[in-house]
Amino acid sequence: MILLGFITRPPHRFLSLLCPELRIPRLSVPCAQPRPRAMAISSSSCKLPLVAVCQVTSTPDKQQNFKTCAELVREAARLGACLAFLPEAFDFIARDPAETLRLSEPLGGRLLEEYTRLARECGLWLSLGGFHERGQDWEQTQKIYNCHVLLNSKGAVVATYRKTHLCDVEIPGQGPMCESNSTMPGPSLESPVSTPAGKVGLAVCYDMRFPELSLALAQAGAEILTYPSAFGSVTGPAHWEVLLRARAIETQCYVVAAAQCGRHHEKRASYGHSMVVDPWGTVVARCSEGPGLCLARIDLSYLRQLRQHLPVFQHRRPDLYGNLGHPLS
Image (cartoon, rainbow, N blue to C red; front, side, top):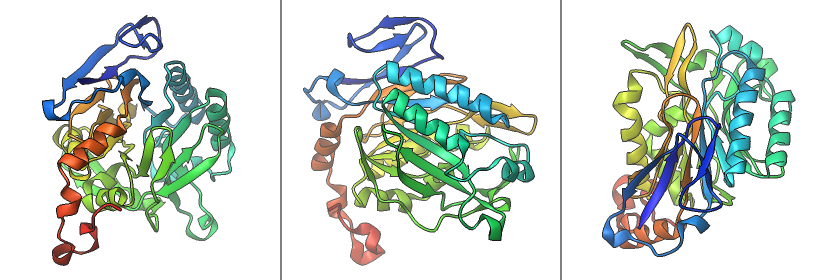
């Protein structure tokens, strides 16, 4: 049995592939790899929940960014997705910390209201992967949070996770980044949230470098881990796919990673390569170059079968390395 992902360009012309109800843009290319024979399943893949991963090139123009994201979300809804994932900084990517602070908004601001209406209009869940949030402490700190917001199909905010690991790095050839100049670290993790595709554990970009976080979410019941990101041009080719596949394998979760791509302005560019990885570590969907979306089916029966055949959480040694070794409940 093969689980298919689809690489898609921005919506233009359509044709039917595999499932009669699933329309895929003309330039689509199937991205399929067979699972190990022992992991084969018999259920019809066309009945499994479909998720969409959106890849964009955000700029400082917030309204244009919204128009681009809304087009992809509406296309995801037309294709039958129940959940669409947007990348970190889907709202904007500014030229400097001062512009970042000036363009930021509270969760109750105009931009989130637009996304609330979009979720209701399309009737699907939205993972808004990294919103520049003016929190309740804005007046005191004059800093923001990198907030991952999850909306249900009625537009209600069902979860917010504020990025706990801030990216303060200097990578030769990529330029320095000091997220803490404008951003406060979040205080806690968010419990996995039940969605039509499965239980989703929320994270953001740099968080993927800390396996403790992914293990904690898996132990709390996550079936899908999501890492909305804006990876750079040096770390991207070296680490992006390797880290995502590692997080999927060690947690036996699906990993969904919506990414920024291309040049945002004269000072910054992102790697792209949005993808979905299954619990075996296979990349089952991947975006092509440029803005667009990719689609993947989430097969939780396959996930449970894999965890049964390879029960690593039952084999952990909490007596040696602490609470992260406890089995899944």
